[in-house]
Image (cartoon, rainbow, N blue to C red):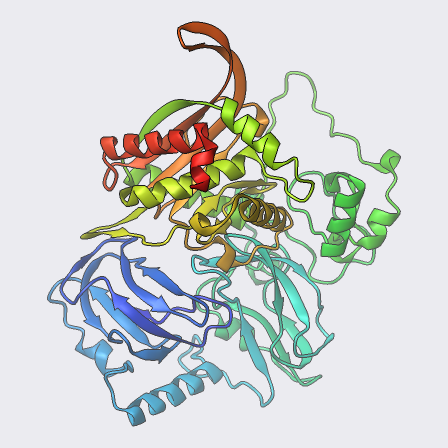
Length: 542
């Protein structure tokens, strides 16, 4: 059966997009994950991949054309399938301007009165705004409401922060574009729902919005606290155990949530204070709504009040189930796709770090400059990529895309997994610029303040575990990159120099390559150039 693909919302402020380039043509076969087109948003030009497989039967928006979000972009189905019915009922930019305006007006009408289950329409009262789960990153498919900062009945001004929403990349604040009273919360704290599911309803105080939520949702949201009311029969205990945490629908008057294990609900200010004071949030009892940890909990925290570990009898087997965060699920999906679709191979070399150690010491003698060995590695990789562009590539099915720019992703470990902020045009940066940018981005990553734009567009990735004493390791390629460099610790060991055994400082690095785009000899040549730069840092200044 044919599938209609609409213009996606690739940023939270995107209202329309421009098809910069089609990478597939009508009649081409499309596999799940193939890049269909490059779409220019209000913030960047981004690749748009297909979530479906089949044949590209129709292109609704030609290259260079602009269309609103949700306008028909393409149709994918079986080769030769009749799609005339879909075309007759959908608007595209091939239509005249008048037809496009009519279609746009029709879409607006449909949005105001979505079809109900019984085939009728839901009437939305004047002044009422239905707010849906936003797409806060280009890869976001569903979101989790981490914290509600407003509750039902509260007044909302335009620009107020409604909630903190956990995406596949970060936890982000979501502000309201409307003013009024928060009449209904569609997804409770801890609840997960697909993009475009009803998040909240805002309107004049006292407006009856009963029936809107049930009839508006069509894609099966999972609001954590509402399932109990809707269920006609109790679910089996085993299934209930696997469900998301179920916070109470109404605000709790006193602390009700134990924060030992599972998801933590913390205000940004409380989190900052805890970090400053070295307090482990898992030991703090929250007194805010639904057990949320707030400022006064950190200010009044006493170590003696921390909860004790649950007693487990000797010899008893036990498991604790912790709900996977959006970030963890995305890491699992993306790395699984990379490992099982890209044929990885690995090249390992040892680098003599004596000159690098001396160069770093000399550079850092300036009190205004502080660089790390990782900064030197990032700079060396960027310069080596300029000499070996085949490593700076992306596999795109029928073509290999060679990036003319060099954007280095730097893997940063965070509590819930891994984030990869991106240094744009790293080859054009100095050591100190790289150091300052890496420090800033790493801090934002750990504080969940990275924006989607700061994590997009990498052409090569560096992962460093040397600070943990790891001598060598291999990494999974961060697709669509073709390679990733794993950097180990600097260790002292006996080495042979000029025929004599002397103490030396060595660092092991391993390059993981996608064999579809980078041949073994190409990867080896890249590492030889990298060796020249690292072992003789002065060459990076030439």
